[in-house]
View 1 (cartoon, rainbow, N blue to C red):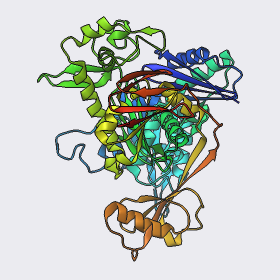
View 2 (view 1 turned 180 degrees about the horizontal axis):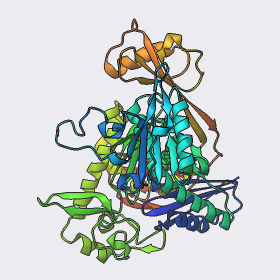
View 3 (view 1 turned 180 degrees about the vertical axis):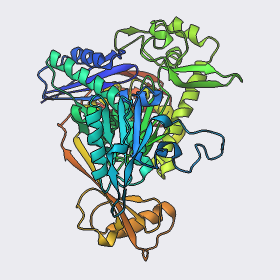
View 4 (view 1 turned 30 degrees about the vertical axis):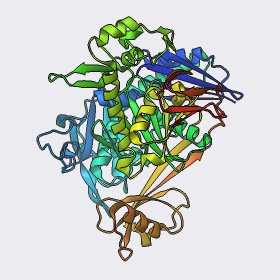
Length: 579
């Protein structure tokens, strides 16, 4: 079995090739056109005669955060044209009433309505396609009322738009997020349409380059941690919105399981950002809705929390003299000052170099310039820089642990990414954690996660009826349940004793339960899975006792005083406090 995984980050592009049990890795600087980086990484690792090729990308995420998507129009039921602008009746910030929400992706002048209306029991007003105006847009999002239950009107509108505008990327809400709550469904559809042309162009260009290089068409990592075909990802960009971070969580879960730990916090610090996620009982936590760029996206995703703190994060002083790190990054070009590629502003990597925590060279033939780092930091204390960036990452880890009712002291910290192992022990100290796992391939673990990912197709079926009236439910999957009259629901694994387990979960979450109240079934979520290839990782034998710098494959670990450990049979460096 020859399987290739390539993860494109903001600074480096990582490749892992698993060939007949051997694991080969490569790391190259990310180029402006990401598809070129993918081919360069594949060449660097010597990929050929592949049985499977998987790819993770941050194109969609970055384009949404930077608002670099397509010129998009929005079509809704007549009278609901302002849906994206009205949102929910909640403030952008609870205690700052003057703070505005992020602007919608579609301006009001490109929002239109079509006559016709579905209700909860079927058609109320016949559809009139003659009321559908012409659209001047590269992408069009369509979201009509109750299309999650009765998609007939929406299907007809989409067919008409595709006939009128064959050059436009048209997306229907029933294709992307067939769930109730019209604003969240509309927002998800708008995000999908907005990002579609950009991601599609990149993936199709990658497919062309792969054919020319003799590589198979890649599968693309989904936000849910599974894999989609390139055609599926190109057709619905929202499926791959958190593609890159999801791959790292898959890899971290494999590493924790092989080391004998069911509960772990995944900590991925790269050049541009840090991604964290809780793994409970051997499975990464999942969400069915999240905010990305202050916009709700109602799709299955891994529960990844991201902050703008990475090795390339820029350091600055504000007007009051306070030290700040990130979210702006030096990226791959010019990169940190110590890379010697023209960067002059100080970064976290420069601080780590001056503290003696980095070797003299990095993957990608980058030789580090100590004097350039010293000039960039000038009078700034590198220890202060590390303290500030660590505080930001501790807050991120608390979001996915303490704020979710999880005690980090019951977890191990899996540190990876090019910069993660440099900071892991300090973060574990702050959180009271006793054990840190540093994989042998820490610098390329996201790419390894791509190789180890199962193929996964998620599906959701909306019900909105009393649980007692529901037909026979699947044996596997999840159900969204609530007490009749509640506004929000809890997600409970399907299986025997569903109602009793809901009451228990409700009491645990809210402090009370009422078994006499009828339950409402909102939705059922299922997933079709195909197993991933078996991946066995190994690494050189190492023993570490802090303070010590440990050079890894594509990463560097800093073991401070009071920490020590050795590698296990998989090559994972198991560090413990006080040994």
